[in-house]
Image 1 (cartoon, one colour):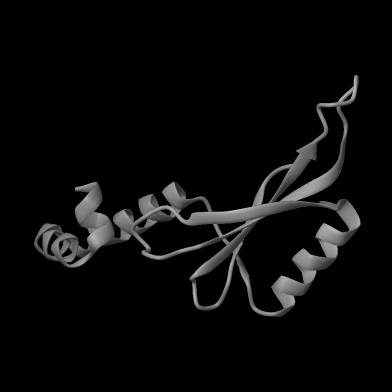
Image 2 (cartoon, one colour):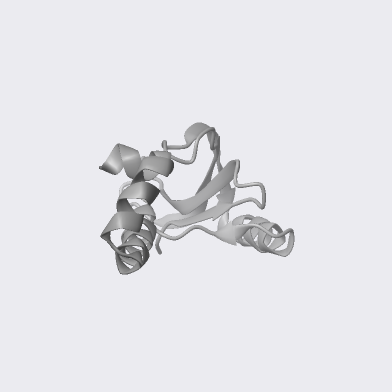
Amino acid sequence: MEEFTLINKQRNRIKVFKPFEDISKPSPSINAMEISHGCVYKRSSKPVMKGSRVETIEDARKEYKQLLEEGWKILEKVFDCIISYLSNLILMGANNLFAKILDDPLLMYIY
């Protein structure tokens, strides 16, 4: 199982669903999911995680499905998005690229 991250329509809240391993047992098994939630204050910084809880896999699936129905989106890996974004900007040309970097706080941070 892998980790899944959802972000709401306003792009200010996220939820991370990942397998929960109970290491207190002699043979650790995954029979639950950890659901972490946090806030996004600035797009150019990491989200602030506020808390987490452990749910059964069935309950976690229900919540995941409900969030998708409410309009939450699956968040791609951040670096993949940045690389794609920068690739598109490079196609615009060097002059436009530098102007865009100066206008975009995230790109200015990377630059």
